[in-house]
Amino acid sequence: MFSGLVESLGIVRQIEPDPPGIRLVVCDKLIASDAQLGHSIAVNGCCLTIVHVESDIIAFDAGSETLGRTNLGKLAVDSCVNLERSLRAGDRLGGHFVSGHVDAVGTLDQRIDDNGWSTFWFRMPASLGPQMVSKGSIAVDGVSLTLVDVEEVRFSVALIPHTLQMTTLGKLKPGDPVNLETDMLAKMVEKQLQSQKESVQ
Image 1 (cartoon, helix red, strand yellow):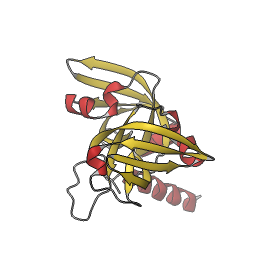
Image 2 (cartoon, rainbow, N blue to C red):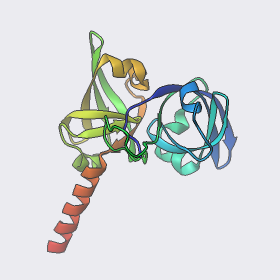
Image 3 (cartoon, helix red, strand yellow):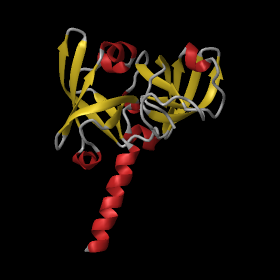
C-alpha cells in the first residue's frame, strides 16, 4: 500500500530483456538506502518487487502483463521514474490510499502552464469515468492528485510548482502515456451500486 507521495526521482540505468519480461535497473540513493530483497516499491505508480539491491542500484522484474498494462514498457535508459516506498503502520497519510495496481494507461491531452503552475488534461478510457468525481482522488504515474473537472473521456488536475519539479509530471508533453489508478473507495462504491442494480433487475 502506498500514499501517492513521491519520495524520489530514480534514473533508469539498464533495461535487460528477460523473456517474457524485463529486468528494470534503477539508480536512486534514497530508496536504495534501506531497500531489501522482496520490498515493494511503487515505480511510476506500479507496485514492483525488489529482486536485487547493491549500493545505490535497485532492480525489479516486470512481466508481460505489467508491461502491457502500464507505461513501464515505454521506458528507456536515462528515463526518470517516480519512486515511493510502501507505507508502514502508523505512517502519516498525506495523499490517499494507492494500491500500486494500475487500472489503465491514459495520455496527456492538454497542458496549460501559468507562471510555474499548470493545469493538465488527461485522456482516459471511458470505463474509469464512473470511479471519478470532482474533488476526488486519482494517482497519475503514482502521484496523488485531486480531480478538478471530470468529463466522459477526460479529466483535469491542477499542479503546483513543487509537484512539477519533484515528479516526472513536470516533463510530460501532450501524447505522453501515464499510469492511472482511481481511488479504491470509488471502486468499492461503484461495485456496490452495480450489485444493487443487478439485484433489482
